[in-house]
Length: 86
Image 1 (cartoon, rainbow, N blue to C red):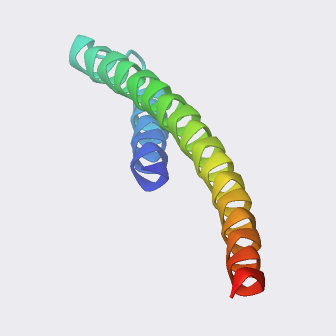
Image 2: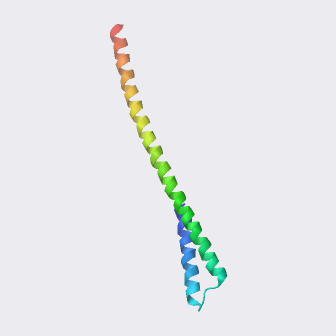
Image 3: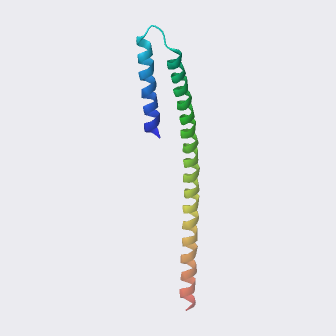
């Protein structure tokens, strides 16, 4: 995902450089630049959403790991009690 954003930024800089070398930017070049800017913004939003989703999933994993540890501890206690009863 980051490679795609980097590529788009590189292309944007190239377009700006090429447009900067001419006296005036053509309407087509301006449109391409605007399209690239919009695409970069969209990709940045997607990255942010995915990062939030990742954080939520990591939090969920952490909670489940904690619950697993609690259950394993309880299981060990039950097994010890069963051994004492035998």
